[in-house]
Image (cartoon, rainbow over all chains, first blue to last red; front, side):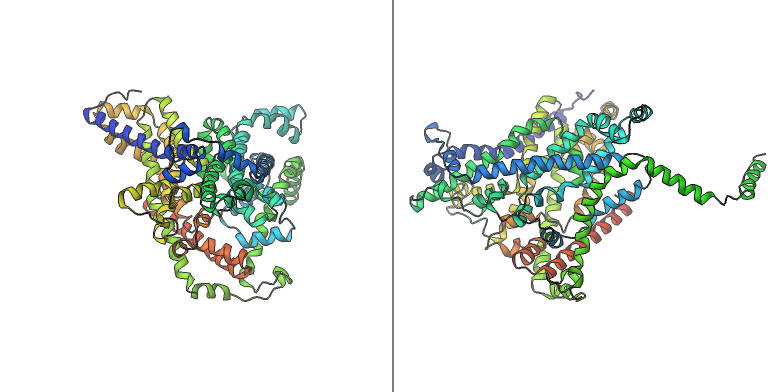
Length: 295
Length: 325
């Protein structure tokens, strides 16, 4: 690209641009770095003077206290279970629904597409959905978090577009060889659709990992609470458990410890996504599709 | 010559009417469906899930027009017509809720719409690919943080002894109660939203800019255009379709304020500005158990939303040479 022909104004503009972008990067990083450093601070120092980069003020107290109570660990494991099972289910349903819809000569394809697309614009709303879950006896069960969201029209559209981009000759050749549609889908098409399945899986996983609202309305049993609900108790409702704070500590000290615990829980609960984040980079532009159509 | 052939052709069509055509068509249809039986079978789970979890709640929404009694069920409960809607519209809450909802989303739309575009234009000027990728990796990260953590961070940073008040105290000598002051709610909500979403929202624009042919820039170089001129005459026209679609979609979502975040950010003190229609629906319906009334409020919200979407789409089509959604 011949973009190197810069005028004098251009060079000045580029400097302004670098400063702006640098500023944005700093604005984005500072809160994140602050949280991580704060989670290693000595509680008294943290509340009196904020974070410091002096290793003398650092402790791992925050983390040992978080793990003194099993609420976080339980929530963590529950969320892993919900996120994995939800993602597997939603990818599976998406693929088997999208494949037939990618066949141009399927009778009734248009009607079925419209049937799905309508649900993107109109819905029953919060209360009727809640009543349905309740009447189905799904309240306070893992199913309430895994099953209702498993059907996602945008995902179907994405997967369908992907299938349509695959060469037709593949399935035609397989048909001549005597394979039926099930064999074609599972033996030929799905292996080819691995990239889109991976993208759908990643975004379904993150979505489920970060969600709290459905769990807040459907789940009452503390043993089934996903991580985000546990986090909400600690971060928003200021209710870290007695095991974490310690039962015989003075009021002032309790407040300091509670603050520290909050920072440590934020870091712990973000770990899986931090681990997954590099995998996302390759799929950012495909995520655009998922993200943009949702926005 | 052509005319003759045409006449012959149409004449033949008329000459031999086919009484078995309907039957034949039906048989063809059945044969086709039978051939694709596995394909139809594959769609059954998805269709069933959609009927149960998407369409059934739409039917359930008729409780908005009923005096819903759980013992009687949805259908048997007595009709009350528009009574719930009237109660809502004439209640003192109505104007407050509607104003709060509209203000937060209109301000959010106005303030949040341009930063991603500017960011994409900025990033587009960075030619070093490796540096650009690293910057993107950082700027996209906040998008993956959950609402609970974002709001938790807000409470931590903005608390009386949090870092922000540490700075505020240095300059003014006193701390500000950000989270319990209704005046600050919208600002905090919108700014934190931009912090979290700006990078991610810019991807689509960045991808569009990356697709611009380098010929255009070369031609501009020959004409001696500077960067601003290239942005004005090449980049912005290329981004226009994406901007239009994004604008319609966000304008059509004006009543769907992110209630998950608003609900978490609510404190008993900031309710005058933080209570919006969707959090109200949740509270009245699921916390107080007034199902029918809150279903009506929710339905009201959705209807306004669909109308707005159609309206904005129509207006955009008019001013954008027939291009809408």
